[in-house]
Amino acid sequence: MGVHERCPEVTDSTGGFDGAGPGSGSEPESSDSLKGFGEVVKAFRKRARLTQEQFAPRVRYSVPTVASIEQGRRFPPTDFIERAEEVLDAFGALKGAARHLSRRPGLASWFRQWAKLEAEALSLYTYECRLMPGLLQTEAYARAVFLAQLPPLSDDEIEAQWAARAERQRLLRERPNTAYSFILEEHLFLRQTGGAEVTRGLLDHVLEVAKLRNVEVQVMPLMRETHAGLGGPVRLLETPDNRWLGYCEGQENGQFISDPKVVSKLQMRYARMRSQALSLDDSLSLLQRMRGAL
Image (cartoon, rainbow, N blue to C red; front, side):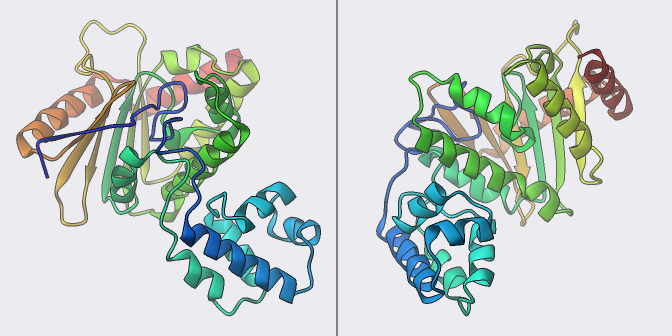
């Protein structure tokens, strides 16, 4: 693995950093595995003598979503697979077919390697100064970000990106032994992306997530004379074999960083930012005051 692996197709600006940009890596793309999974779902649905209209509410998804999955145009979320397996009494066939799906829609191709590592990480550190990290976004906030993307995203792209983001957010609760640290710039909340109501929901959500024992949220105050993060956003993670890796992202490029010397520099900067940001208690107190002021 190289020192810096610069990846193409990086677009996750207002389209939603965290690898859900509108480039070719994230557009709804069909594949034989997706089509095959869709056919299996359709076969078991018909075996159960259910129409799409009858099946959709039982798995708590819309009829268009069910149709897209059966046609191989949309990647099935984990909860859809689990509910469909139960509703259709599929003998494990759907879960088995899902293991062979070959793509992660809503995640750009350049981000999939990091997303895979993220799902297995022992520790995950995130500093963000542009917009709320995907792991902390609410659906309303994410959709506001997606709608602001230029060039505009299609409805299918927006749905695929939100599905991917919601799936990733399960990590916070499904991996209680993973330590998550977030350092967020105060202006991310002050900007009120999506409006006051969306921001209220975002603040409520972040405050709720911060209650988890494995999650730490710190706010970098608006006024700060010294700041170790002026080089931009950064992510760090610890792998199951205790290696540390880094990832940095711009508007049109991304870097996967494995060189220990470079990762060490990023760790040093992140450690300094943790001391420069507000304490955990002071951060939560500030977020609560901001919530009360809206």
